[in-house]
Amino acid sequence: MQRSNTYLFPFLLLSLVLLLCFVLNLSLGSVTIPFNKTLTSILGGEIENESWHYIIWNYRIPKALTAILVGSGLSLSGLLMQTLFRNPLAGPFVLGISSGASLGAALLIMGSTLFSHWLVFEVINDVSLAIASSIGSFLVLLAVITVASRIKDTMALLIIGLMFGSITAALVSVLSYFTDADKLQQYIFWAFGSVGNLSGVQLALLSVFILIGIILSVISVKSLNALLLGENYARSLGVHLKKTRFIIIIATGLLAGAVTAFAGPIAFIGLAVPHLTRQIFNTTDHKILVPAVLVYGAILLLLCDLIAQLPSSSYVLPLNAITSVVGAPVVIWLLVRKKKMIF
Amino acid sequence: MKAKKLSIGYTSRKKNTFIANDINFALSKGELGAIVGINGIGKSTLLRTLGRVQPKLSGSVFIDNKPIESLKSDDLATLVSVVLTEPIASKNLTVFQLVSLGRHPYTNWIGTLSAEDQSKILKAIKILELEPLQNTKCYELSDGQLQKVMIAKALAQDTEIILLDEPTTHLDLYHKVHILKLLQRIAHDTKKVVLYTTHEIDLAIQLCDKIFIMNSDTNNFGAPCELIESKSFEDLFPKDTITFNPKTGSFKINK
Image (cartoon, rainbow over all chains, first blue to last red; front, side, top):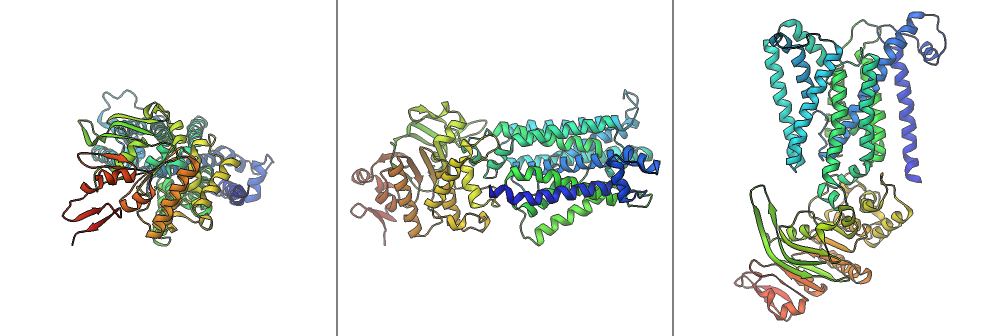
């Protein structure tokens, strides 16, 4: 069919760019490893410099894989939200999921000084942090789902998500006010966002969550397309609205919650990538958009991580700052130049 | 399609707000029907209730002698299609994509269009004379064109019953008549039930097989000439402003 052929070329191109970004991400960093040596190493060849080999396999490949999972997961959840809420400004963050994760992390890091006499575990490491933020994001998600089952209007749900976000943000600032400088710094470092430092187990867990999210999205593709007409039309086309909304919200929660738990709150990717993807593919069909945002999101996050690493310097910038600096102008550009932000 | 002692309105947690009660009518296959009445009387609510877009309050609606609530939503989607007044959520759809969404109840789990689906979509596009606009995005269309696209979607859905909420609102007189004659042809030729709400009573009198007049105290249903004879149109509007002329079947402004 002619239709699928028109999208074949951009898909091939995007996949090539993704591969290129992946290898670039492996080769650049505080230590620059020549591009051809990186390629040799990942293709299983021997390179003379043992430390390069070690850096690539033990540090940069897990980091690049995390970046791919994080970028894909956030972008997909953004796409789901925009269709579900019929709102081009929706993203995984408007549901308050990331704020919930922040609250979980804040309670663990900063709350331990306040409540240390009854807090059972004092050990703050990456695992307990991930657990705390997962619990936080899922509690907020559960609250949102409970409210969602009572409210028919998705716009109201969007505002409720924002309100949950405000409440959790307020609790975090109260906690920060009473906490000491050390703990505050630790929390702020988590909030900077990072795709490095994930253990093998964490990486596996993250992949499982993202995979479930992708599967749930794929089975919802048909309903997502019908939702483009609005809920009443979707219902008249035979879509089970309650079930569909539930599946999509769960998928978003898994995708955004898992990402935030392991990589910290990373802004704007979920909002900007679906719009950037629509610029290339110029379609609203989720059969095309779902795989496309996965690839595009991965590329963008690999690039953002590359910038954050400040190649050949020993500094690492906060990833969250880079994604905002890249993402916010994209949104402004879409509104000003294209005069439209449709989904 | 039949309605018996139907009550329509809105439900909230505490109480039901009734908009209209005791609605009775029956339309058989191949009939074009219109729902007329003044603003706010509940024409759209009735239409949406008949399409199960919103729940009824009491009474019953039958499709093929089956109560509407007994139908599964997948099956209902192959029996009833609706064109509502509310705008579609994404104007970024192309005309072809929008019409093809009408095939939603028939496609597989991921929505692949079969050859039959393709031909039904193209046929619907052809009937509404939308071929040159196939790949146009909906935000580039005029209101009237978009209305035609929505009707094409309903046609592609290939249902026994088509419900349309004010399908001629944004059209000029020529296109109003064009669309209504088209709806009449669809009803008569393909033996579908086509029911629409409208404010153009004079056009409805000329083209429809049956008319349902919604009035606050009494609702009348019947063929246009029967309704004229029973003087049902005469109490529709305050008599000091507008009077009905039974000979011409039209309304006149009192000078």
